[in-house]
Image (cartoon, rainbow, N blue to C red; front, side, top):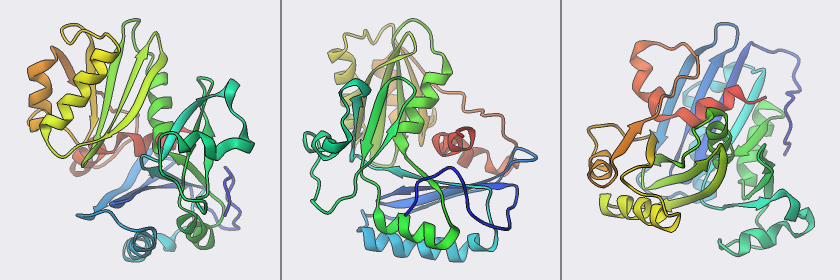
Amino acid sequence: MAKTNNIETNKLTNQRLSIQISLNGLSFSILDVSSQTIVALKSFKKSRVLTPLELLDYLKFVIDTEHLKQNTYSQITVIYRNDLSTLVPETLFDETNIADYLKFNNKILPSDFISYDQLSNGTVNVYVPLVNINNYIYDTFGAFTYKHYSTLFIEHLINLKAGLDSNMFVDVDENQFEIAVLKEQKLIFYNTFSYSTKEDFIYYILFTAEQLQMNPETFPLVFSGLIDEDSELYEIAYKYVRHISKGNQDLGFQFEPDMKQVVANNPILLTSFTCE
């Protein structure tokens, strides 16, 4: 298993591959670097949570059926999207006690491998990747980089250079969403929530706003991911929060018109191509 920014291979294409791993499925995208064109972006979902072994089998199936092993890549990134993560101030972080940070908020096993990402805002993101997935990716493609989804989400928001007022950003997936709040380009809140109804969804948004003393009449609420203006999630949010919008996800990449919706639904996956 390797975590590196360099791929050790003799034959390289000018393409980058990113694979996003969730417990109920996965997504992948390929960027042609020379033309800055997204040449592939697909999502595969299951109706239930998979075990790590089932997820590995599903990943092997997708990689084989989508013929991803036919190419070599100049860069490969694996992104883990799960709720087994926590942010720690860099000044308090001690790698020898890395498991202790997760024990406060998550149930982890003694056998779990724990890793971390260093963010540009002076925090460390501690999380659990899947060792069997990492080993398979390394055996199949060679050395690669892996990160947690929230690392990319937070870094993307910091780079947006939001205004001085508090801004709430909500990235939506099936049965899960992330909330991040920034003020003066500084992260003041981040958490992941599970939901099964639209009432669950709006409850966590309003509860977060209340705890941070954010007035629903004034703060901007910006959505990304699996949500659009016609969805029941968007409609119930608009009922309780005055200023809501779907964020501009344009990262400057080219893509075919028929890929527009899937690109809009996977903005954080695509930000992996902007990270060195």
